[in-house]
Amino acid sequence: MAYTKEQLARIWLQCAPMAAWTRLRAWQEQLGGPEQMWDLFSPDFHALLGDDVYASLADSREESCRTILRQLEALGARPLFLGDPDYPEMLSHVDKPPDVLFCRGDLPPQGTPAVAIVGSRASTRYGSSNARRIARELAEMGVTVVSGLARGIDAAAHNGALDGGGRTIAVLGCGVGRIYPSENRELYQHILDGGGAIVSELAPDAEPLPYHFPVRNRIISGLSDAVLLIEARMKSGTHTTIDDALRQGREVFALPGNVDAPGSELPLMLLRDGARICTCARDLIGDMGWQEKQPAQETFLDAPRPAEEADPILRALALEEKTLEELIAETGLSAGELGTKLTLLEINGKIERRAGRAYALRR
Image 1 (cartoon, rainbow, N blue to C red):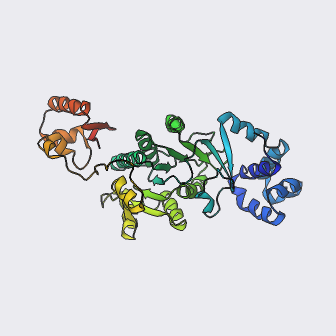
Image 2 (tube, rainbow, N blue to C red):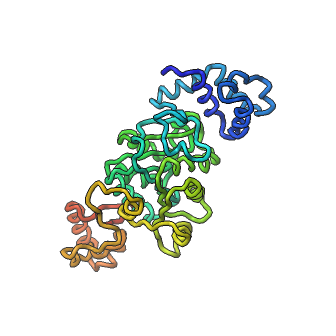
């Protein structure tokens, strides 16, 4: 792809180290814009920017950004420029939108409903299973799921959207050419294979530095019509996403949790202060005024159907998933008898196996 001089200048500045962005914005305003910054860049900037930032900008300018462009081409990624038709419309209206957003894969058409699902990296079984379930339900109804590819709730949300055959967007705190955490390498590829997108405002090879993540959170909420918090402590990085969502005028939802669980601190505070409750996709779809694309799904609070009430296993799983040991204690069945029944229920699509030798009703 051929780029104009202005586009090259914008890519050049966008790929500068994040620590220098504030100073670079000030200089752009003073000089008249990215193209003027490109033309006037000289050793005079060395003292203003410091060794590392100046060296980074000088090297990429000297090569006319060739290294950056080669990286993008090798990844099959492309830059989306603020103000262009293919730049996400919702994101363009937030405070300090990225001037250039680097994208691998396919973003949904403009106007497609999108929900960010966020929460703790150290998620509980309750949090992960519900994040995955609600994301799946949303995807089945045609809603794009946005999250950050982190372990815990983020990964559960992305996987749930893929389970539902839908589209999901991962917003990275590193470059699109890096996969962090490495354990999500397979998920990263599944997102692309499923028609979704990986996006970042950072240079393609940018490392996942700690201060990148709070800044990227405004993009997660900025790409979304609403933000659903699954679980998080009061003092957590997730709190910044909620703050960004409120500043951006996004609807905020929260999943209620056990009152004595650490991960319920932030959701319960938000619910107390006026956030909307969400126990299933129908809650969110209804409150947002969106039209459902298929018949309503049961919520995780629904009791088993009458024909199933006599089954001790289904009755034990009515409200939440249980481990094998918990099921033995609650049903009174022997380990061998329970194992046989669980296998049959799983084959018949009544239940599903979860991590940690746990089982849950299939919704």
